[in-house]
Amino acid sequence: MLKQIANIFKIPELRKRLLFTLGALAIFRAGTHIPIPGIDPEALQSMFEGAGGNILQYLNMFTGGALGRGTLFGLGITPYINASIIMSLLTAVVPYLKELQQQGRQGRKVITKYTRYGTLAIALIQSFGWSYFLVQQGIVSVGGPLFFLTAVVSMTTGTVFLMWLGERITENGIGNGISVLIMAGIIARFPSQLYSTWVEINYGNVSPIWGIILVVVFVAVIAGVVIIQQGRRKIRIQYAKRTAGRKVYGGHTGHLPIKVNQGGVIPIIFASVLLSLPMTVAQWAPGLSWLTDWVQRGSIPYLTAYVLLIVFFTYFYSAIIFDPRDVADNLKESGGFIPGVRPGRPTVDYIESILNRLLLVGALFLSAIAILPHVFSAVSGLSSFWLGGTSVLIVVGVSVDILMQVESHMVMRHYESLTESGGGGALLGRRD
Image (cartoon, rainbow, N blue to C red; front, top):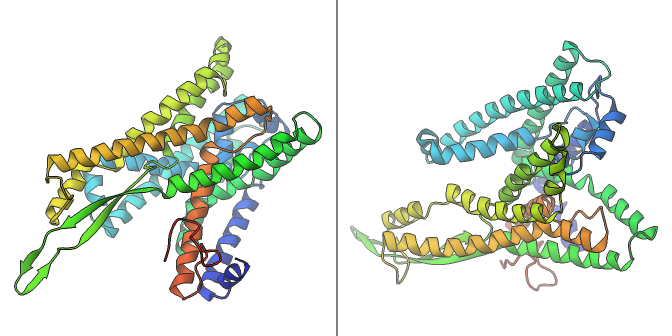
């Protein structure tokens, strides 16, 4: 394995891409510590420490703690994520956008341009709303129009710069740039969380046995995420023979792969945001503090609603991005069919039956990962347990994507596969 890792830096193009990615991440992390003038950092930190499970903690996770420090990159790449999700939803219901998506590269360029404009608009709205909220909470030492102008321009510019930086990583670095930035922000908080766990165990607040169990759970969670994220159900497709002049086309067999986890991390994101809103309202709205016990993170009502929302959004998001009717029509037009299944409506029903079963497996897996931190914390007493939910899915998913891109560069240049050890099986379930 050490030899394989050393081979990475022997490939000039791959070495250049890795160094570019590391440099971009260094710039990103530096920006998360540049404060916006006028914000009282101690008061802001105290507010986040008492935030509990409201939406501030959730947004702070995606920014790598930058929001809680009141910095230039306080909004992070969240406006771009919101704009991308909105465009994905609109593409499924707006004929013009759906037609653009089907036009190939040129159509996707137009959609990307709309996504950028949407990111700018959302960043302006969120930065103004965040500035107004800080003023209302007394977090700002010097208020007035000058503070609003400074904060809105700084945070909006920071978001636009991160969007540009992410696109440059995608083009000149390794992995999807936006995903890499999100992963970097999440990983940046891991050391402090691990230290808090060590402190709880070291000072006798928690039994040392839970430290060993934590390592076992860590390995099991990572393995489970990799298996589910890479899992595919391959439907066999047979293409009929057709003759054009003296040439015979078709007659071969292919596969239609359907992912086990169709929605990725999107169902957990939607469910987490919706559940954080009641907690936010209960903490800040006068006379609604009695709702706190019902919407508190880790409570039975909270976990029940969490699971139900994840299952719902898993099926909902899959219905938007994957249409069995379109798949059946495309197969029919290309002369393909599923052996033993008639073209048309029977093919649609067959694909839907397989898809529904896969979605159930994916939804149950996402639910288990999402509620794992709450269950483990309740059983072990570790208040700083962090494995599970959105963070682990993003980190593992992006890491696997980076690993596969590095491997493709190495295999293309006749180096030994990075994901094989000792000539045996592939770590990612692949064999070259």
